[in-house]
Image 1 (tube, rainbow, N blue to C red):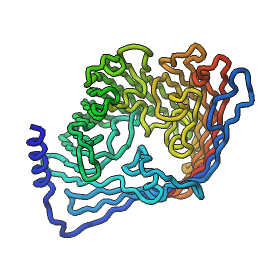
Image 2: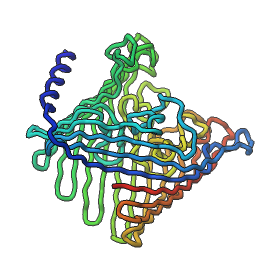
Image 3: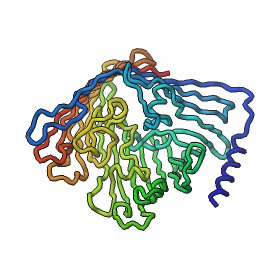
Image 4: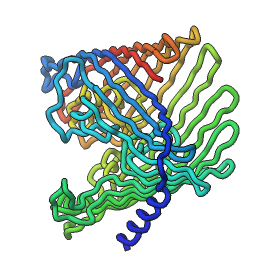
Length: 456
């Protein structure tokens, strides 16, 4: 049956996309940025066992990236969409020597992105029956920026707009472990797939939508790791974005449920258990022309230790959960993947599994923001954030506080296409990162960054 549907779907795509390209228009858009940063500490761990001589190095460097998107428009209803990243490097810095070191928001490795990596290449065909897409395209964006992870994946998609309603469906190939020219294994049916169906409703001042996701991750069934388990997880994700007067409001709820079953007869509870998690986000910004104020609240359920039920945290990532997502970077240091994870390599703590940076998981997060726009070209924003864990690690020497962070950023628009940003972030590190040491301490951290961005 699986082969029958695969052949039928392939024939349908061939018929839908068969067209002669007699003339092609080309539309190009690009973004280039160059920046520099200084991070005071690469590890917020302080002294141990009463010692205060623990040393954590700082880091400072310049970096850049070029991202170019090109649409080859065959006709008003048919186009080929492509995108590549190039020269994604630290100036004069060490080059990656591992071709398997993947970049989260790219279809290529870090080594490839340091030269050139093709991220997107897909066909888009618009017909009376809807818009069809097939190829490598961005997966993981939906609703608000919360939970979004723009990761290129192989996707077959369909959407149809009728009046105020939009309907959509997707099949996403997350991981394929079939035998091929580049995979000489003898495994079969060990793929990681995602199936999506959703609906969006638009009105004058906003939109609302909901989608359902089913994930089947069989990539761990072979070789007894982890204990031959099969993950099947569901997700329901409603959201709303609207504007009431001068206040823009957005909210999203991501609910996950499913199970992980062992496939080798093992009774070890860690790999034979229920999975459940709930993430919630609400954000509001009031715009008073020259001034604006805003606030954000997010909750991501944490996992209680030593139970047969996984209730949140990064563990659910293996079932398709993304936590706060790599696209959402609410602070300059805490829960940051764009600057910290990607360029500095992360900020560590004594808890190896609980780094300061990275996507948000297991958290209660509160942030207030105030901004001023002295001119139409400038924007200065001050934010104060506090975060604490929903569930703390199994240690008597830590508490739930991730800490407080103050961020000050300023952006000046030199021209319509060129902008310059300055930023300063200071993290008052919480005792969640103390580690398992009875006398362990933590140190505060700060970041300085500037960035020049050209886009067209």
